[in-house]
Image (cartoon, rainbow, N blue to C red; front, side, top):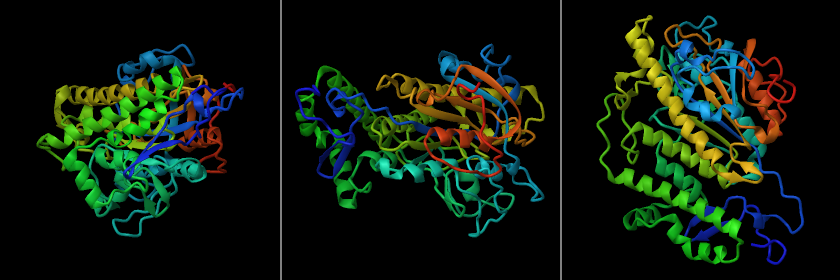
Length: 448
């Protein structure tokens, strides 16, 4: 729409019809005539990979802007100017501290909280509030959903999953309160319907069954109204809306295809119905759902667990039919180290697709990547020794100009939670401390 001659759309405009709701991306028509365009919001995303990495093939050579990416990080070379590799960060509270075995559970629990979880397999779990939920709590009134939690490995939150630690610690990185984990949604259709399906985020059984029988797209339901809106928009907004609606429709089609295909026989795990046939498709679809959620400003905070701690996922598609976790206990055997490295590389390749989608999605005077802060990493560095120092951590995006990427930063041993406080500041979320934090992590922006 021409903002001078036509009426202005509200920023949170949606298309509605028959119980379906589709939010809209940021359009020029949402800016008042002659007004300075509103700054796009900053998004915060955490992607977790389990079981540590092969540090020798992860850590870049060189520091500052003069660095060379190692083998595992090579897929991110096209995004070098949007990348910060952070070395030297640690999660002290993921160590035993007198509690004995259970490093995987403590790693998952500690990753975003910086807290040392209570060792229990019962209902008396106790951890900390996670960084993502601190942001979600502060920004809850600005978006339809405070946050989304996604995962690519079926999980449970009760029982003993690691040496006397509750499965809630192993399978959840998002914690709303110290006693309330937020397990990730692992079913793509459920995640999609939460975002786009119904006004109250839940479809009643009759509506759900009817939609599944007819295979009616969410966009078919609101198609007529979308057509009416398109006719009122200017050329630039028409293109943006068309690209956005096409992407949403393609996601739904991929989900529907996955639901009609027989799932592959899982060697080590029970997968939820309706997931894609390959792990690469699964991860890509879940991260694409996150892109759509950010693009429509349905939420500004997201977490994705590529796998749970202690994951037994196998990767036959890259020639690694072995279970991931046992491989990491390689004791230096070259053939096993090579398999772990290939898994690490595969995870980064999938993450790079996510980064590419964000960078290819225009928003305001840049892209979604320009207005995002993406943390990728683990709370275990060396999976063979279960260490929690010098963690593998990446930060991508520009945080709407508040980050100065394109560097490898090396810190003396520093709490990972210092990074989170610095990112929360850039979200406009004032938090005094988090877990074992000792201050804000410096050198991320113009203070470099």
